[in-house]
Image 1 (tube, one colour):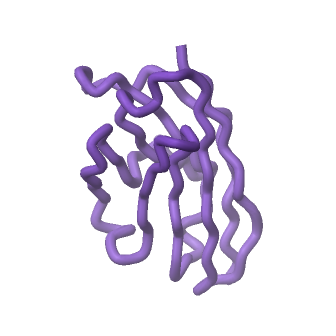
Image 2 (image 1 turned 120 degrees about the vertical axis):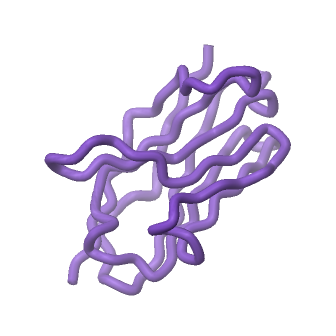
Length: 118
């Protein structure tokens, strides 16, 4: 069982930056792949960025060169650094975890709101 708690959301002006954090419980954090998802009002939840248990990263096209996912296994934490934020980045951001041997995310945080004003 993994429990995830996000923090770091808030209100920021377009062009600004935020860093989201996701703290995980449990002693096996390093064996999990992690992802950041987001859901905007009226839209489906979508994957934004992912990081494997080995540190390999992947991004969707619309956040490449703006967002960076990283992890600190000593702190059981995954981060999402967001730069050059746009109003269309406004959403609830969720972190999620999956065992490295699976493709489905099993564990989810409660989400943190990110609002980007124009």
